[in-house]
Picture 1 (cartoon, rainbow, N blue to C red):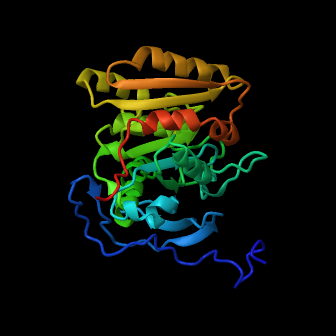
Picture 2 (cartoon, helix red, strand yellow):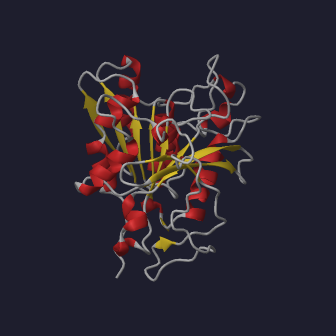
Picture 3 (cartoon, rainbow, N blue to C red):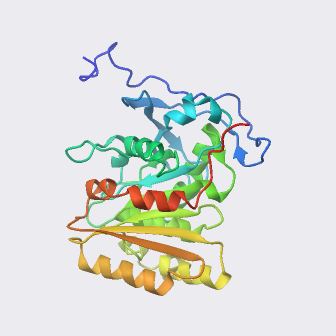
Length: 325
């Protein structure tokens, strides 16, 4: 009956608190942990994992973007149940889908392949094996409407359109800061995405290196190409990873770390574009590393199954959580 979500045999829709208390922010004694700032979001359980952790969902009314949409969140068992981390800030990964990315995010509840891999279970496994940080996951919708007729928003504030760049880089991080113990500095903030979400991850870190340090870009677009940019070339350039990487190099930092991953059976132009970006801009403060997946195709299952090494590489550049003294 739980499988068919028949009350009272299911906890879907139940409130999820993640052990939140109080609000108002402030830092711990080390100055590295930002305590929850509040206000508390109304998280509802979307799925309970075998280890007792919850994927929950909230409809976020973005104060800075003016956009309202769903965000799924997950906290590892170490965040809620491990006494040594009871007052520790945890790193955050904002995970973005490819495809439509509207009213859903396949990283949130998806199980991939015959082994039924999921991002949440994989993060827990990799942490236990010493290969990943125990990330808090934020999994927002990517687009304000369906990706049909070639219309998508490039995770940007395109003039006259919903401010999806501000949504992803301001409102979603603010939601995590309001409800979780996080790392105060950019050393605790990362993106991961596939296809269009890979572009968004790459671009967000390059555009806001003061706020985010690392990203995993799976099978990504390299330049913005939404038809909604027509007539807005200046703003389009301001959201072009090639332009942003060049500007970051000229400014000599801060350093960012971008892990690329793609399958060898993917689109040849995308593969060429990634290699060209790395050869041209992967120097100075823009640190890049590539993982090619033999026989891999353009899908989340391919990326997740092979994400262990990219996750370790970016985790090595990041901070937290630090056990309580």
